[in-house]
Length: 274
Image 1 (tube, rainbow, N blue to C red):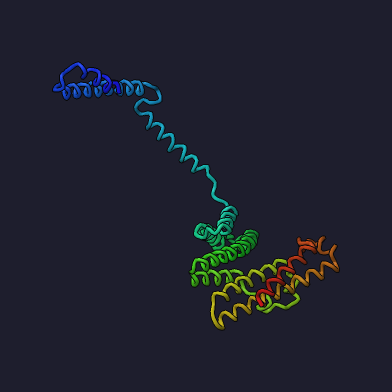
Image 2: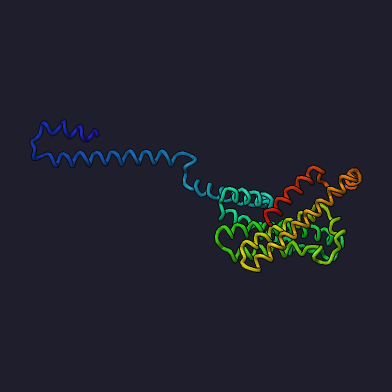
């Protein structure tokens, strides 16, 4: 701007044929002055302690050390947090995110189920057995969720495989496996929940099938819900007649009101299955 002002002020006093040389002279003067200013600023900048040569390398090396230390100190992601995030993503209809999270959880649970080694110790073997049973139930639930997501994405065959794997993990029904009805009903709420879980998988599998295969899966689901309802009715009857004894023995953590609500929900599911 200063060069332009000088140019227009000076050219009023000189002939017109000297205008180009004057303009060029002022432009060169302006460029040289700017270069000198930039060099001075660069010199001042380099003289500051934090901006000396080699400081960037030190900073980058310290940043790498901090990253390594944070990576060592970082804790592995808890499985419960992964499942919670997967459920939230599923509720928000973020199917791809939920599918990846559930797939990661399934991989972790499979490694637990197949990686528990007792080493010949009976106590450790019992702990491993209990842990594996719990992980199998959780894995079956996760596979059921993966099956639902695959079905929503149009992968019917993939969903069927997940449901069948989940059913296999839960194992056969005790009554269908030859156990007596009385011993089966003495199992408690856990058996009712297992029946309900198997029923949900069979009913979902029936919706993905056709013809006799679909009808067979739906009938198995109905049978499972009927058995869950029978178990709950038996527990409610026992709790009403001998409530104090059952609470002292600690056989059942659910109150009578909770059992009745659970029975009502199971009956609703059975009506929908019919």
